Image (tube, rainbow, N blue to C red; front, side, top):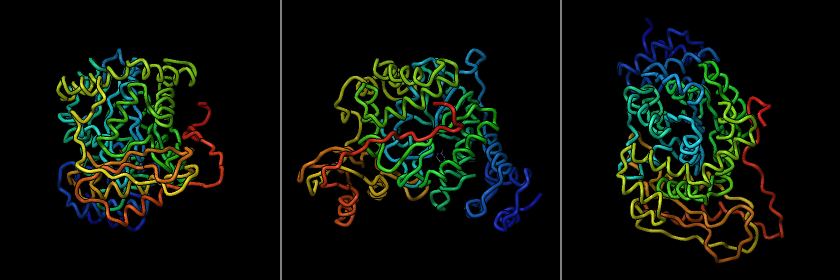
Length: 449
Ligand code: URA
């Protein structure tokens, strides 16, 4: 058997690793017989030299099999589904979609992630709700799926443990945006869920991991191939990520916007993603015969309150006290339960005109520095830090009105950060007619529209 330094050297020198070599690396991570610096070096070698399709498939399978692979009752066959995103700003789609799918007779055993680079993580958002427990054993997940229909959990010591370790290290080693590492991370989790169908939301744009449509398409095609290779029927949507999804960014704030959406007051862009991803999954399960029918079904699950009831049941099943879950789902004074930041400041619009751009990347990076995200493995984040956009793209706005409410504690935003935020709002003084565009640009493989 080759030593870990030999494996690192092979990849560093651009050699294709054999199935056995990849398994040796996976075993060493699983059994904790590899040093952190060696894992970092291997991640960087993979980031630099890439992997062939065969290596990517082996890495993914190895990561999936590093823990338990779930199995489901026969009567659920064809109905176990999920969606996963490559990471966005204000991306709270999972919080709305999982319960909406459960309300449409699907089973959703969602294994999610924490924040990665500047993007927010579903687990961090849910942990802003006191008592929410992301650590569930496969037997507990099955119980929740039987009674509620959906759960949102994290990787554990026994569930994709290798992703748990590598995921945390990728931020610290600047190896987040690597095609094989993203494949391994996402598809191993979905493989462990033993899904029948999967939709991937692959983001492109300024605030995404991949900036242009071409490279995101390459990622989407490779994810679809790896998913199908594990026997999961996989489709990807390519969606734009330049600004933010919805108006709230930051962990507690995104829970609030998700709850408002589940109460029927969701922003159009969030609902577009929820209904498209959900509609595709209902089409893939055979629950509907057209995408438009699937979208309507998901939309009705949200507006009827059926998805909200599922969300409340999921919170309770995952450790949130009954009174708290009930309060969040039937009231609007969310801060009775969620932690509110000690301070906030409002930024003012500097001229009259039409909002033509909001830089989601700038906003995400500043919130990250203010404590909404982590830079060191295992670092505590501040769930109350975030921002509310008080304007949307295309709005006609007037000078001196507030456009952004920034929630913060320690550290406070610097003057430079405030100036950067001011520059992230672009207003056209001309009487521009702003053309709203669909977020979803393409579906892979084509032919689903
Ligand atoms: N989500 C994941 O789970 N992993 C990635 O690498 C990117 C997004």
